[in-house]
Image (tube, rainbow, N blue to C red; front, side):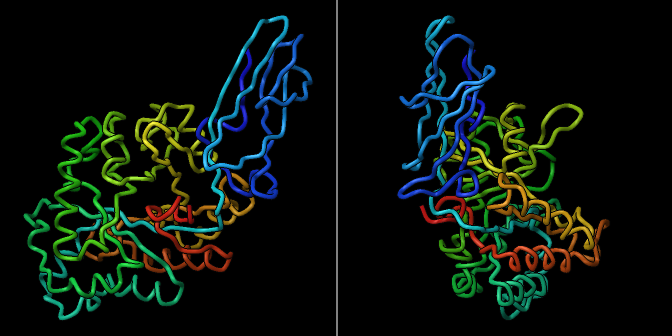
Length: 359
């Protein structure tokens, strides 16, 4: 059977995947082919050897269809894939923080005069000032102790708007519990919760501060809900796409083949929705300080994972009253940001441009 094996359907390709030529990116297309015949790729003859074929293709558009055609003893066969050219790609990273709720209550209880009197938000401002870092804080609508976003005053709205270029707020879930709240939920429920959070963010922090979500709580959303998310401006969904005893998980229900593709190659486009799935590269609260650099360093040498660093952590581990408090949590996120900065990575927001790069 004729089959293109490389690149994979939905692959996001950048300069590390081929050779930059005038007006395009030259890549090599490879695949399997039946014997006793000829193969053409996008109309040009391919080289054949031992049941395999390969041929160069130059990508010149944002999306390119690649068609392999076999004619021979096993009849006429065709196989097509579509790929995305990240044409303005550059080394870049984003930093996302999940499960934000404790600092909201602190903000209300302490009645800070200014937004950055909050030590938690001041930490992010310092990292922005020192490294240029940008952050998206993924938030809940309510918590189990009775807090709800409508309790948040709009007194800080001007400050939010002033820092909205580098500090964003995004929907994460209605609440922290139950776990996996959207794994089997309807798209209507998910969008209803998203709009509740969005409305509140715009009310107290301004429209500039709102970011479409890139991480849904627990990373599990039924496929029928994905088009609804795309309609709400979602362009990227990050997860772990890891293989566990029961199969791949925290992967937005992608099948095993596509999940493995994301895990190994960092990104995958879903053409039906326009959403790109992204592999989280590090979870700082799960990575000891001395392991931050050893975790990220190997990615620099992997052409499939080096271009974009998807950095990630969770809010609760910053607070000393939390049962799993991590005293050096701030040092961990700074170590991750310092590492990527020293290696030439630019901070971006995934919802701007294409994965943070100009389109």
